[in-house]
Image 1 (cartoon, rainbow, N blue to C red):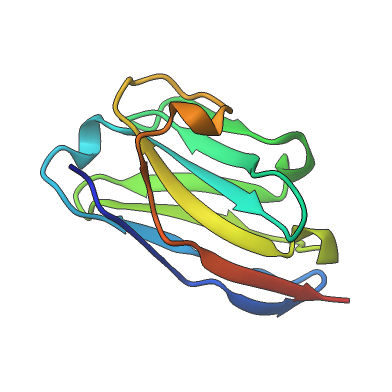
Image 2 (cartoon, one colour; image 1 turned 180 degrees about the vertical axis):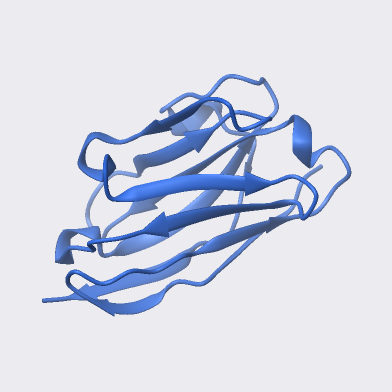
Length: 124
């Protein structure tokens, strides 16, 4: 079992930055693929970024490339999402997810564990 708790969301102006983090419980965190998804009101959950268990492989959603960076610190059981040059369309609830299968996938149904989400709001 893995429990995920996000923090670090909040309010930012367009062009600004935020760095939400996701703290995981459990001794097997380092073996899990981790990802961030987001969901805006009235929209489907969207893949933001994913990182393999050791951090060698990272993937991003198309609209996040060049602006967002995912990273992880297995010693701290934490995954981060550095978000730069934020846009109003980045406004959403951001969720952390963990997958025990080892492959980074953009499909939300493949992830076994989810956090409660953290709100990110970007004003224009």
